[in-house]
Length: 99
Image 1 (cartoon, one colour):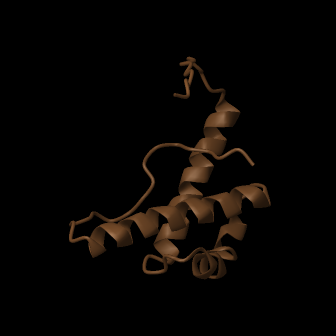
Image 2 (cartoon, one colour):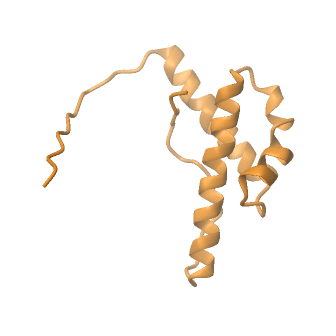
Image 3 (cartoon, one colour):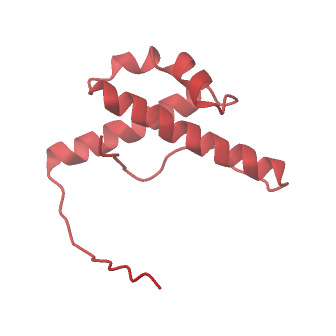
């Protein structure tokens, strides 16, 4: 049996970090809005990368936002395939992926 140790750490984000989190969330939502029916990462990248150029963020964050949006859309497609009703997909929580 493999033991896994988990640690909870309270973190108060600075204004700069909160701004990045909100920017990333908006980029994910923009990618979802642009290509709501495209669930493949390649198709979503082709449709939304040029639109994300308006955001002032590093390129790796744009690609991570597209990847996160593709994951959200793929999960929605899978739920619909199984017969579950779904809401309009969007990102709610501020999130950021380490590149």
